[in-house]
Image (tube, rainbow, N blue to C red; front, side, top):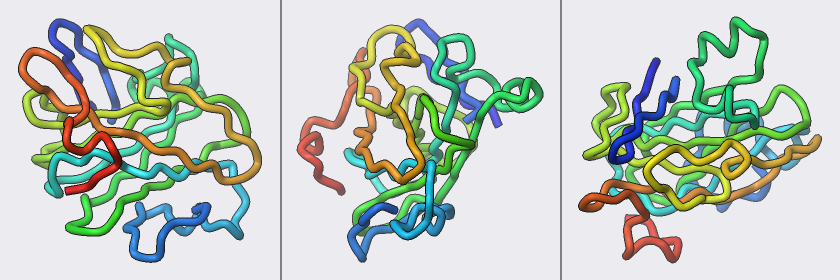
Length: 181
């Protein structure tokens, strides 16, 4: 699948458990991230959902600018690391989604909220977030800005989703403190 993120004038191409609260919804690979399981993996606590429509898609890329947000087919054909975990957006409870990495190392993560579930990124309605929650400008963040190191265990992080607001893109103001709708 291909998702296009256009932040004002630039398009991005996205071929797009450590301890988790008991009521949290988990992505389909959540069992892979139980504390008793070995990694490498990252469990993402999703913050700032605009609503509970559509699906969430978490993607793992190599942490370099040439491969970050590249087509999944191109990365797989070249033998480069790429992983994708989709899940329906839960109707309630906190949300976490987990993704396994092919091995310890440095990776870049992107999280998409495909609100209409059409399999395409729509700038006017869909949300996007990255590891480390870099501020989004007129172009995609550098891979290092959205990167993280994974060891042999499960790492937990939080990603705040960003949505179009007027002429800019950013987190929903009322939910940046960790709230969920």
